[in-house]
Image (tube, rainbow, N blue to C red; front, side):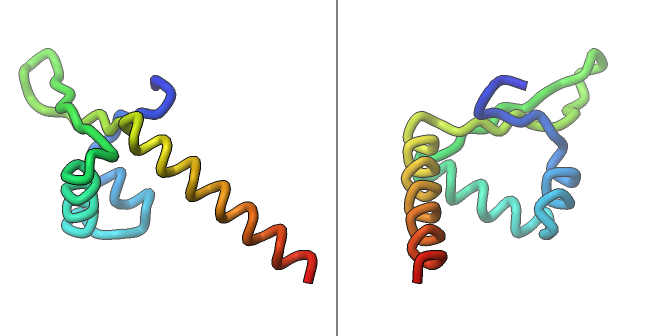
Length: 81
């Protein structure tokens, strides 16, 4: 797995997030529309689609880093007071 990407079937991805595949579809569509993730189908030797590669874009990684930094700052402030 390349850093910032995930090769997984939609059903397995949804299960790992404890959501439905429909919810996952809506979320991935929104993230793609906003330029935060890209997806690419993965095919087997027979030509059948096995799953997708979900990859954070540069913009997606920047947004995630800002979110995590804000979350860390909030947690640190909560623990101090």
